[in-house]
Length: 482
Image (tube, rainbow, N blue to C red; front, side, top):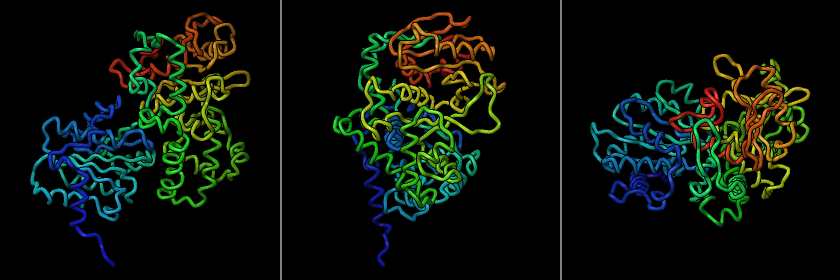
C-alpha cells in the first residue's frame, strides 16, 4: 500500500501558507469585512505573555476560518515574519492520521526554527480524536509557540476544553452574525440608525426600512457568505440546509458521537426548528418527532453541542426555578435556519413573533449573560426573557418580545410583565417590544418602556462587546440598554 510521503505534506503546507513566500493571505479573505469580535480575538492571539492555546469555537459558516486568516494578516501587519506562522486544516486528507506534534515539528524543520516566537493555527480541530490531550501536551512542550485552534462543535469543544485544558486553553465563542453586524456588512448602519443614547434602546431613522432589513436578516442574514452572495440569498434553503445543517446532522454529529439513526435525529431537529421560541415537553417532542423519550435527552445534548439549538429553562411567577424540569423552550442559535427548512418567512407570517424572540436570544450567544436567562410562565401569564442576577439568583430585569403594536393600546403583554415585576419586587422599568411603536407608559403601577423589536435586536448586537457593558450590566444600573 502506498503511503503519503513527507514531501507531499511539506508541499501541501507550503501551498496552504502562501505568506511563507511573501504573498500574504488570499485577497478575497483579506478584504472580507471583519466581525465585531475580531479585535478581542486578535488580542488573545497576540498576547503571548499568557501561555495558553486559544480555542475559537462556533457553528459552521459563521466566519471562524476567515477570522483566523484575519488574525494571521494582523500578525503579518505587526511585523511577524510569514515563515513563523502556519495554518493547517485538519479536514485536509493529507493530514489525516498525523499527530499534531508531528505537524508542528515538520513546520519547525521546514524553516529551521529554534527559539523564535511561532504561531500555529489548527482549523477544525474537533476531527482529531482526543484533540484536547494532544493540544495540552503541545502547550506544555512548546513554550515559544502560540497555538490557536478552531472548531464547529462548540459545546463539545468547550466541555473538553474545560475538562482537559484547565489552565491551558482560553475559549472564544464566535456566534452567527448579529443584526448590527449585518447592517454594517450591507452598508446601511449609519443610514438606518439615528442615535444610541446611554441607558436606552437605539433609535432608527426609518423603522419601516429597519424592519425590512430585519426580515432579510431573519431569513438569511446570520451567515456572512449569504449576505454577500445574491446566488445564496436566492437559494438560501439549499445553501443553509445542505451546506450547514445537513453537514452537522449527517457528518459532524455521527463522527463525534457515533450516532446511528441519523434520520431520527433529523426528524427531531426539524420539529424543534419549526417550534423555535415555543415551550415544549419531552412528551410532546416524543409524539411529534417519533423519538423515544429516553433517547431525546441525548439528542438534545448533541444538537446543543453542535450549536444548532439553545435550551432555556423556566421559572415561576416568583422567579423560582422548578425542581423537576418538565418543560422548556428551545431556540435555534440562528433564526435563518428556520427559513431554510420551511421557506421564506414573510412580515405577516405567524412565525414572526417566535423568530424575533429567537433573534433576541441569538444576540446574546457570545455573552455569559445567556447562562442567566430564563423565561417565566404561570397559569395566567408568561414573560419571554427573565435575567436572574448570578449571585442572589433574583430577577433584576425582564423583557417581553412582540411583533405587534397592540401593546400600544392593549394591556396583555405589558400586564404580564407588570404583574411579574410587582410579584418579584424588580425596581427597574419593564421593556415590551413592538413592531413600530416607541413610547412609555405606566401599567399596573409599573413604568413600561415600549421599543420596536428591530431596534432592540440591533442594540443588543451592537453593544454586546461595548466597553460600556452588556445589556445585563446596564439594566442592572438603569433603564434600557447601553
